[in-house]
Amino acid sequence: MVLDRKIAFIDLSKRSVRIEKIPVELRRKFLGGRGLNMYLLSRYYTRELEPFSPENPLIFGAGLLSGTLGFGSRLNISSKSPESGHIGDTNMGGEFAAELVKAGFSHLVITGRSERPVYLLIKDGAVKIRAALHLRGADTVETQKRIRSELGDEKTRVACIGLAGENLVRFSAVRTGMKNAAGRTGMGAVMGSKGLKAVAVRGTMDITVSDPQKYLSYYHTILKQMLETKWAQALGKHGTPLLFHLCNAMGFLSVRNNQVTTVGERGSGLEAEALERYSTGMLSCFGCPVHCRQRYAITEGKYKGTRGEGPEYGSIGSLGPKLGNLDPEDIIYACELCNYYGLDTMSMGSYLAWAMELYQRGAIGPVLTGIPLDWGNGASIIEMIHRIAQRKGFGHILAEGRLAYKVFGEASLDYLMEIKHFPIEMTDERLPKSFALGMATASRGACHMRSRASIDVLGLPEQVLEKLYGGPVSNRFSSYEGKGRMVWWHEVLNAVCDSLGFCRFLSVFSSPRGLGYEQFAEFVALATGMSLTPEELKSVGERVCSLERSMLVKDGISRRDDTLPRRYFEEPVPEGPCKGELIARDQFDTMLDEYYHLHGWDEHGMPEPRTLKQLGIDT
Image (cartoon, helix red, strand yellow):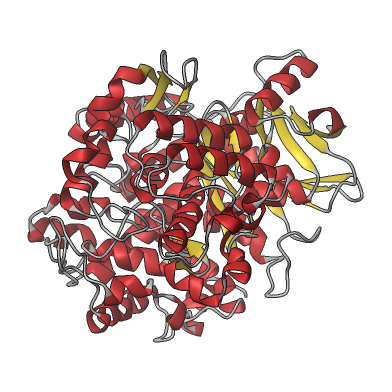
């Protein structure tokens, strides 16, 4: 049964393994994936916990329904972040989570540090620690190939780090497959600090569900509804690059480190239709009916022979316009390098954009950087990716992420677009006020995947929005009214998605016809036999959000940290379709008050004692 999957506690220092059952009561409170990861992380979390210490846990968590026939099969990886110093958590698709479940586990808690490189082999209820010295320095694709060859099993799924993780680049990723990355918050660096090169999983155990006939029937009903939506059809045809045109046309794209917010018609070469000339087909993550992952090949030019998957919209924005670069082949190749080295494309773009603006302003120069860092210089962008992953020259400085300010000077932080020591990604939020609040309050720092209300761009009738969100919400994208409610609602829903292993692209994240609590509750009941009402599922989301907030409070995070870069408040957008837009501090504070109130937190952003008691959170 789905609920039979266990937790393995693995101490790499002692080379010991302890396997435990997951109590049903914990499942009811946290489900799995991100939810159960946060519960487990909270048992270790203190302000003093050092991200690179052996005591810092690295937690792999498959969603409760990962591995079943459904709408995504996702995994969260969590720890204390070496990039921000706060909560580290990242989510990835592919086939790894399903294979972990088939091997008898849903969660791994890894502590300690191995003196020599090792990898874990998880197979049908057993955990082995194996030598990995021969894998040192191998890229993330070669590592997977070598492990499968060594084990003589091509069905083995591998999550691993590349050279960036081995070198403790603070924004390195964990990778599986050709493209899937647990990229955000530096989980690859935590893995590297433990001497852990990879986790290989292979399972042949059945994944049984509580009521297979009814489950299959319900799945087919929801599948038909889902595939009839325009959003799913567009996503299956173009993948996430379809979002680039809208973002650029409306004027909330990060261009040259958020100095401007659109590239106008010059961005046409980065739109989904233009990228089709590189496409060789579409595929999906395990169990997902929407094939949104693009495969590509470059058949001529300086990058001839480059093949892979992607790039996603976030990577296009981060390694493209954010750096003043509009060459699609430069961007595709830069993404591929990041994948091979195991670097987060979004943080890579953010820190390089920071350095480029400092270079533009004369705050740093070629003596320090070693190469020119002019906007749009594709050769320099490619070279800096190599230097950062290898920690060579100026790359060694940028590999430290925001801590590079110790070299650049305190004043340089004024040009790092960050929140809670974590960089803003590929967008600019001065126009979309709900996006701005979501960025400011996200529990892992600046993050579009914690609470972004993408449907805000649709301008739905306000009566539709009121019915969906349970209160008045303006349908104007630039309005502040009701956007605190909108962000709160999506934050809670997304926490449930991550805990179940559902892909949020198929939820109400981007389409009002996407999956919500009623469908989630039915899937849980038919798969596990565990009855949870939509309201109880919503409480799970609230529990996860308030638990995360409680950990941030331990770090000293409060209202003053739920804010935005100075540029957002003080510099109106200088040109383009949203010229003049900025964030008004008083109206931002009103949104923040509404958001706190709906969560049951006080005016400082701290969960009220009654809220913690009601949710059953012991901090």
